[in-house]
Image (cartoon, rainbow, N blue to C red):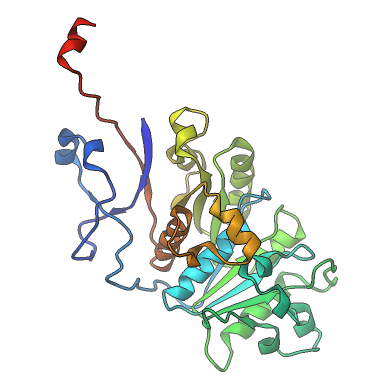
Amino acid sequence: MISLQLHTISPNKKNSPFPISTTPKHLIRKSNLKNRPNKIVSVLQWNRKPELSGETPRVVVITSGKGGVGKTTTTANVGLSLARLGFSVVAIDADVGLRNLDLLLGLENRVNYTAVEVLNGDCRLDQALVRDKRWSNFELLCISKPRSKLPLGFGGKALIWLVDALKARQEGSPDFIIIDCPAGIDAGFITAITPANEAVLVTTPDITSLRDADRVTGLLECDGIKDIKMIVNRVRTDMIRGEDMMSVLDVQEMLGLALLGVIPEDAEVIRSTNRGYPLVLNKPPTLAGLAFEQAAWRLVEQDSMKAVMVEEEPKKRGFFSFFG
């Protein structure tokens, strides 16, 4: 059995006039095509721009509970993908003392002020926002400087004030405010999820990450965040075929969340991180970069994908195989 992650679009939705099929013909049985109600087409429809759904700005927190699953990498690549689609984005690194988002974006030398100094009155909000030179509609806001402790008065209300200040800017409110949540479920986690109205849960297909993801899902729902989607990161199809790794379908059944994207294991992620050059900007694009762009597309339209099982076509047997 081979696990493929495909995007299902209902027939009554306005689709591109030129859909690109993502399923190889030799993997689909003709008997299954007649009984299939929906047509499986590719999500990458480059002849149209995604339509922004929901009220703006949309405040999205990217979290996981477990550290090292790819929250900051997802924030950087999804945020820049949204900017490349033409939407204004403000990314907030809410990890106090251990911030890394500026490194992944290559902006570490341009962060002079942080949100703490804005709250203390030492600088203006526009001075703390770092605008990306590659895409001017993408901005970064760091909560604090590295190796610094958060003031006692900083909490969820302070982050809500920052979000409201971004909404009331003279140059206009951004379309997306993406919050990079720290690992764990302590005070930093509670602060990061307070102003959010939707969440993206990043997990990997291993039992330790899934247990933490299930715990974080319950905390998000208790905080009033009902729109929760997940991204399954570092997926290896060779290990899934060998039954050494859980499939994406198994992960979705365990967590019961809508699937926003599936990111394959890619060595280019480490190279792009060390260079401070996000994966989605690579030319030619890599598989992981395309997967992040697809996830950003679905996030704009508040869409999701389905993990389906596609059966392998049995191998053709020759004439002499009858005799063993």
